[in-house]
Amino acid sequence: MSEFLQLLFNGTALGARYALVALGFVIIYRATGVINFAQGGLLALGAYLAYALNDTAALPFALAVVGAVLLSGVIGAATERVVLRRMVGQPVFAVVMVTIGMLFILEQTITSIWGFEALNLGDPWGVQTVRAGDVVLATRDLWTIGLAALVLAAFFAFFRFSKLGVAMRATAFDQEAALAQGISARRVFAVSWGISGGLACLAGVTLAAGPAALSPGIGAIALIAFPAMIVGGLDSPGGAVLGGLIIGITQAMTTGYQDDFFPWAGSNFAAVMPYVVMVLILLVRPYGLFGTKEVRRI
Amino acid sequence: MAAAPAEAPARAAEMLTVRNVEVVYDDLALVLRGVSLEVGDGEIVALLGANGAGKTTLLRAITGLLDIHDGRVTKGGVALQGTRIEKLDPPAIVRRGIAQVMEGRRIFAELTVDENLRTGAYTRKGRGEIAEGYARVLDLFPVLKDRRSSVAGYLSGGEQQMVAMGRALMAAPKLLLLDEPSLGLAPKIVEQIRDIIVEVNAQGVSVLLVEQNAQMALGIANRGYVMETGRIVKEGAASALLADEDIKEFYLGITGDTGRRSFREVKSYRRKKRWAA
Image (cartoon, rainbow over the protein chains, first blue to last red):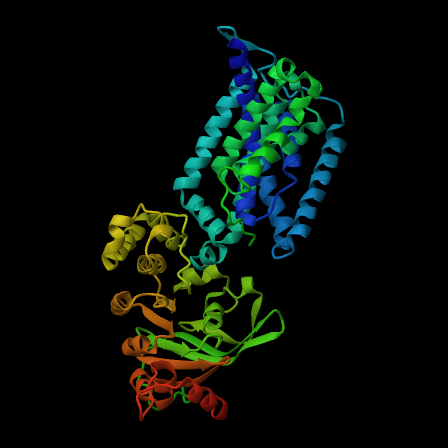
C-alpha cells in the first residue's frame, strides 16, 4: 500500500508539471487554432531565466521565479505579436512549421548563452524530503503540487469569471462574432500566449528544481505533455489538467510496477506509456476525454 | 442630398452615411458596386434584397468585419455621424457606437446567457453603466431573466435571437445593425422581435434592418432600400415601397390581378426586366 501511495504522490507531482504544459498548449490552441510546438523551448527558457535572475542577478529564489514567470509571459506575448500575428490566415501547416522553427531557435539561444552543462537552479528545496508514514515526500514535489494547484485554480477562476476570460472563451467559440462585440482577437491571442509562456516557465522551474538540475534538454517534457493534451481533448483546459495527471500517474505506476507485471517490456517502458495511454483513449474517444467533436480551425 | 429621391421624408441629422462603396473579396470578386445608403438619426431603415445581393457584405463594410473574409472596401467610404470609419477595426467601430446582430444569431452557444450578454459590454467601461444597460436589456427581454445561467446553446431559436439582440444592445449603440432577425423564427416570435425593434428605436437607437421579410421590415421602417447584385436598385419611404408593384411581386408575393405568384412568371419577368439603377 505504501508503495502505491508513494507512486501516486510521485505521479501526481509529475502530472502537475505535464498539466501546466498541456494547459499552455490548450490555451494557445483554443485561441488561435495552432499547436505551439515551441512550448518546450519556452519552458526551458523560463527555467533558465529563473536561474539567471537567481544566480546572476542575485535575487531571492521566490522573487526570481515570479520574475521569470512574468518575463516568460511577456516573451510569449511578444512571440505572438512579432512572429505569429504575421501568420494569421496562412495555412496551418506553415504556422506549425514556424513554431517548430522557433523551438530550435529557442534551444540554440539557450545553449549559446548558458552552455550545455547542467546547472544548479538554486532552489532552496534541494533533496530535502518530508516523511508521512512510509511515504517519502520530496519537498520540491510538494511545492510543485502546491504551486501548480494554486496557479491552475487562479487560471480557471480568471477563465470563468473575468471579463477577459469570458472574452477568451467567446473568441475560441466564434472569432467573428467575438470581434463583432468589440473583443479584440489580437489581445486575446497575445494574452493566451502570455499565459501559456508563464505556465511553461513554472513547469520548467519545478522540473529543473532539486536534484534534477537544469539542462537545455528539459524542454523535451513538452513531448510528453503533448499526449496529456490529446488525452484530455485538444480544446479543453480542464481536460488538459486531468490528462496531465493521468499521464503522470500512469508513468509513475509503470515505473514502480513494471518489474512485477511485465518485465519483458524492457527497462524503460514508462517513457512509452504516455503514448500507449494516448492511443488507447483515442481509440475509444477520438476527440479526447473532454474535447468537442468539431475541433475547428479559424 | 440633392440626389435623394423626392419621396424620402425630411430627416434629422445623419447617423450613418455609406457613400459609393465598392467591396472586393479575395482581390477579384466585386460584390458591392458603388452602394450609397443613409440612416438618419432616430430612423429605422430597411434593407431588402434576395440572397447574394450583397446585404451582409454591406453590413461587413460598415462594421469592419470584411477583413476576416478577405474582403476590402476598394472605393467609397462609410461615415458615422460625419466621421469616417471604414479604415477602423471592428472593436474601434463598436466603441464608436455601432453594434450588430449577425445573421444566424451567432451567439456563443457554449457560454451562459449571462456571459453572452456580458461579452456585448466588452468595450464599455464603468460597472454602474454596464449594470444599468444589463437591467435595461432584461427589461426588454423578460424571458431571459430566468435563463441567465443557462447555457445559451440550449435556448430556443427565438430566445437565442433575443440573446443576440440583448448582447448587441449591451454595447449601448447609437446605431444597431440587424441582419435578418426574423430568419427561421415562428410568426409569433417575429412579431415579438419586431415590437422590440420598435421599442429599442423609440429609446433613441437608430436601426438598419436587413430583412427578407419585407412585410415586417417595411411595416416598421421609415425608409427602405432594395439591393440587387451589389447595387441599390430602389429606395424610398417605406409606405411607397410597400405600394410598389415590383416589391409586391418579389417580396410580398402579391401580383396585381390574381393575388398569386407564379414562379415561372417571376423568372421570365426577371430576365426581361431587371431593376436597373
